[in-house]
Image (cartoon, rainbow, N blue to C red):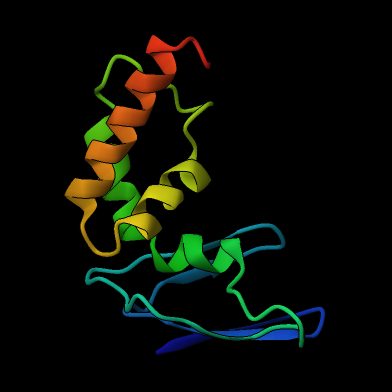
Length: 118
């Protein structure tokens, strides 16, 4: 299965590993039982070929959830401050190593608290 999205001149094809795909005007929710591939092919504008954040959030949702589940019990974790896009930064920086992404996210929360950056 794959989910094809087309908006405002760009399109993407996202592999879906389940029969459940729900869409509405603002969000796309994919339910799956096995991890999705870490790559996504997107035709974007001619000057910027980077994937869109909303696509990365879908493709990396399992890794984001894994890191979130690991850090949410930390006393400094605040879901309004440390959202999915913030977690995505660590997931992408540490490739497929969610343990390293978790350690880096916790270290950042502690650094920000120590240096009063929150």
